[in-house]
View 1 (cartoon, one colour):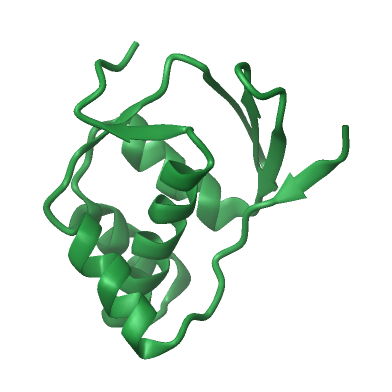
View 2 (cartoon, rainbow, N blue to C red):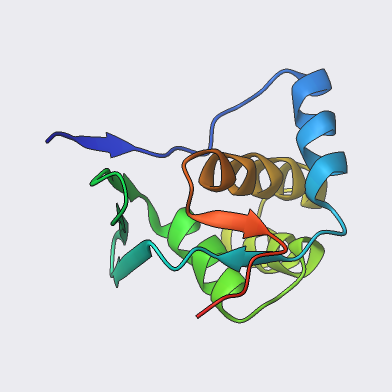
Length: 115
């Protein structure tokens, strides 16, 4: 099975605002079927239920680490903004989009008990 890549993609302003609005105050739980291996250059995700494998860069790994530590999206975005010296609004849009992608792929859920 090929590895799929999760990217922090640039989105249209409308889509980025929608993703940010959908995730801003939500805390996500990590799916029991999700496994992740954080590496120096990023993170590799495995979804046990589907067998899908995904890979992301160091920014994705930082977002994942924030989720593991049960940080709010705005705190994760603040860390990304500081570490990579990007405007806070851009970091918020990118984090929201990446979290939305993780949810779509089944790695995160709203209201699910985390392991």
